Image 1 (tube, rainbow, N blue to C red):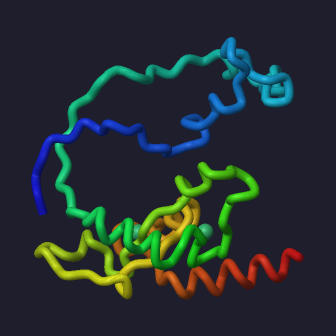
Image 2 (cartoon, rainbow, N blue to C red; image 1 turned 180 degrees about the vertical axis):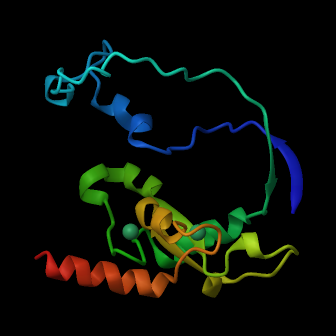
Length: 156
Ligand SMILES: [Zn+2]
Ligand SMILES: [Zn+2]
């Protein structure tokens, strides 16, 4: 574990607001179909202060980029949990949808440990968020896989 001051170089996508510009026209106007329809909401013009720069100090559990890249090469760009590839939706950018999940959370490992491909799975960002929903320990990846499979089958 390493204590360091971090200024993130790449913005992290945390919510729909981060990717909303995709729906904007080049002049910054929202496409008509994406405009908010409910103008009767009295809070529609309420302002919320955002932006600015804040320095934060975090404790990072170090990830190994080589293991990450090797996992993507070995397992491919397909979510272990939901089986989605996102190619049809996003094209070549679909590779950005995938992350590498550690079966034993790094946050529980204080010391450096040797991990192999068996210790990680490739998952999509959505499933990864759900996996970590219950905090650092997350939930069991195979239980979630089973759950998603059942949900998908029942919705057909
Ligand atoms: Zn998924
Ligand atoms: Zn994870």
